[in-house]
Image (cartoon, rainbow, N blue to C red; front, side, top):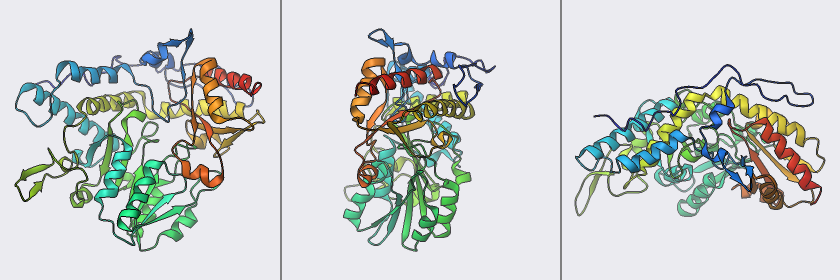
Length: 438
């Protein structure tokens, strides 16, 4: 029986990779060509063809969530139109089709991460739920230490603060420098025998800096500590090999990598998942139950309680396929090109101060900045009102970092492969106009 054949097929058979010429970056930077037809790719994203008040939308809020291509939208819609049934519960054709499609997606994601087996892939709602699953399922006891960096997203801070209240664990904070880099010397000194887990964002949503994950994991393992990586900001931009990294646990969200909202993944080494207790329990987690006891299914089923987001699972599989079609090399080249262009231009505006490394290549597709004598929210609102430019303003769910430094907030522009240099020019020109009146 065919399993929803249209769900995982791209709308286009391929893209012109002969090299798409873009306008030259003015100043010291020279013209670079990206082996990817941006115009053809942009055709796949419906939002980019819409207008507000006669002007196109410029979407620079990709670190919050990316836009979705037609193939992902079609995959989600296809589930509801053609096979809207449950997985693993019924013995009819519709249920068999959906079960096969969801397991195909699990297999695709396992290969995407280079996991040893598809059973190491647990479907969650998002990165937040994945980290909460770990914080509630690991056998953490009073005196155990969990190490975090000082700029973790609330998704990787609050669960551990709650565990501290509930279980009496200790939370250690590893400092970062003014360039956003983790202080590895301090980290190594903090690796005491009590450190049960090191839980770090692989790429920061604040400044785009990526940690040396392999080195950190090696040091942690020598200490007998487990490592959990929040990979929400890196899976859309870089190939991840969990076996080469030797990471124990890794969480990410579909909505940041072209996938539907409400779907995420927690990867875990199978031997570790077998030992962990389930967090949410109920239907589909048990092999048998009586009025007094139950026997849980093996991973991943014991962690996937209740009816799941089947459309989201299928849509995430389509998103992974799309990303692999585009290729991470071309994605990174485009992001670096855009960030170099905007960073060069913003660096010429005296009132603007960028957060993180001065070298834009170390910030991936993110540029975060404050504006002297201007409210960050006002700047973001005016960018939207004047030119339909969508950016993020505030503390970006990294309240602890901002509050520790007495910074009220910032503006964040984040790019993806479908963004263009022309959009960057419009962003800078609009920002300069705004700064003349505020």
